[in-house]
Structures are given as structure tokens and as C-alpha cells.
Image 1 (cartoon, one colour):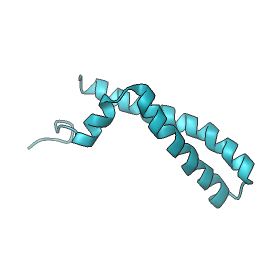
Image 2 (cartoon, rainbow, N blue to C red):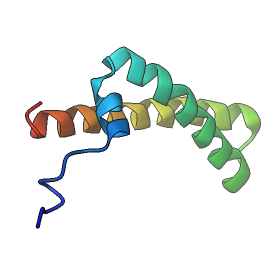
Image 3 (cartoon, rainbow, N blue to C red):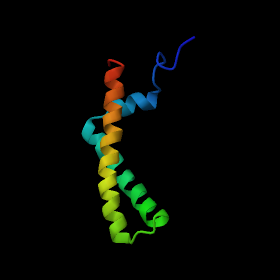
Length: 79
């Protein structure tokens, strides 16, 4: 029986990992900014402008974490 570590990643994961870093950033950054802006405005009751600045700040960090983790996983599997 194959362990989760031995299984091949799905087609979508392989496509994502094969994208250039700039393409991954261009996809993840706007989504993370919008999601984090919404979280700050809706759940933390921040004003719209401050929520947007927090969205950009945390969105940049989230983008770096997501893209970095993707690259790390691809390198770990040795591909």
C-alpha cells in the first residue's frame, strides 16, 4: 500500500508547480489581497482603506508563503 508520501500529486498540483514563479505570484497575490481585505473589513471591523492596506501587507506575506511552499514541495519530490 502506498503511503501519502509515495503517491504522485494530482494533475492540478503538477500544473501549478510547473508554472513560472511570476505566474504563480500573479495568480495568488490578487486573490490573497481580496480575501484578506474582506477578512479585515468584515470580521475585524477595520475601515475600508486600512483594511486594504492590511490586505496588501498580509497578502504579500501569504503569497510568499504559498509560492515558497509550492517550490519547496516540488524540490522535495526531486522533480
